[in-house]
Image (tube, rainbow over all chains, first blue to last red; front, side, top):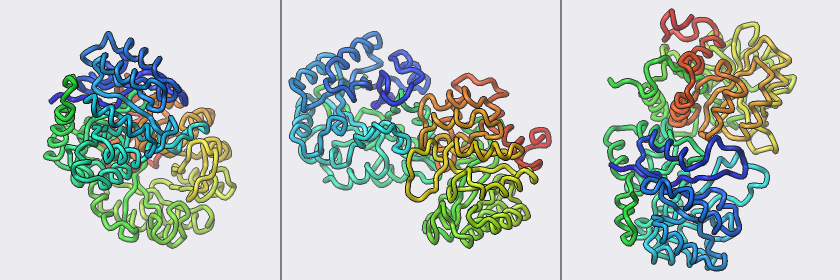
Length: 266
Length: 282
């Protein structure tokens, strides 16, 4: 079964040094973990006012790795001519785009937020969000924008037909989102499992039972976090059937089927 | 039975926790069983564990009352006695009750505890900790102290310490081995490593949910493999993750063995790990 990392980036991080953050290093890392490909964002663009230059850098950096690393350009929907960036993403075969509403100062009820959801749905793309970049307890004094909220995700799921992947979401955020949606709305929201703890508390195992394995995809958070976590979390699920179910459901086959206008993820 | 996920070389988790009936959790027994089960799957030979009072049920976790300290420790000793090969105990104390803490440590030694756990009820460099540190040196007991990496502000629920605070205590007690808790347990880990680097009697455990890239490289850069101890704390999956990442960094097998278990054998009292063979335990 093909495994895809839907929550990776290239590029530096404003708040600390990273050992590596280039495309080849990402490719090496996912290959080491038997992951066939990745949807890749441009990490610095999350903080840039205009993400367009970062999207060009991203496309250029990933070009030598076409077929393995797919771009997930950054869209800031309150910025003039943001639809040009969506078109740029489509032109470059992007399966997804990324957005960071709290870093842009957008609340869940901001009109531009829902406009983005509508546009992404119309384009047949996936919108990848990030709840957090690092642990709240270690953040830089200037890093005060706050995490993505469950309300942001609920607003998209309720008000648009966008398919959304929430990366680095913790258990509370996932539960507040999932159980705040209708069954039909829930079907449009996926979560990566990188911030759900394994044993002994077994948050991931609990959510696989309460929410369902078919809501989860794999996202590493590279270059910020160790990609070995994906394998460890899967291997430490309580029982073999749960592990097998997760492996099957953790692929993007279902997600790709939902977003029919784009090419398969790899 | 298949080979453990972390291989067959000995592996000791020096920072583990268990639950007991006196806490507010109804599923404590399940969580305890899962720690042992998942530990077996990973290949953990021994969990060196503590119970911090009632985990907040009757007094705060990091400010446990003397009665809760004793009750939690008793529950911990019972678990260690129930699993003598794979569970050993830290004796947990609240240094604000200094005389009671010293008595509790002596009681703990008699019950089989192999180290002293101090949570966050007092700043690490407070003189109240000095008699405890001195007692630890006399009895070859390591101290495991809860740390918050880089104390830039106060946080509720803890009288928090950072690496610099801990280094001041360790400098006053050079014969005592101090374990700095959970480099991945929150806070600015980049600050802690240089803060304790010049204090050789501080070693760091690698536990905590944090799996930031670059953290392990910095640990090796500042402390080297002889001052690092593998551990998991509350999240065994991130412990396994870091173990594999260490292997990927290309550590020599002997250096990896130091982190996995040999450093633990060195800092704990002789015979602390009966699960190891006589050759390994040496």
